Image (cartoon, rainbow, N blue to C red; front, side, top):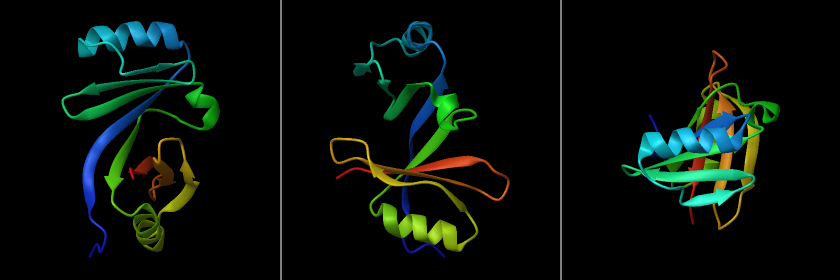
Length: 118
């Protein structure tokens, strides 16, 4: 039983090889301009979710979109899932603005992410 519940999947990151082309498609799909538009990341807010485009994501080991569960305590949740058999992919790191992220794989190799906002 979980001692550290999640706040649900609220962020999905998509690896892209051509940021400008992907931005055109996602802007049309979501019907809104990006809320973050940087050379290293383009992000959207849509229906209470964050959709992110990560240029060069494949080179960072992203094999497809990565769903991120938001949690109150990233260290506790990461310890919980690794104790249950998940394998750490990328340890907790601060990506700016107090946002902490980490990724792990499930027993079938699917990449999953955690996010903690301060």
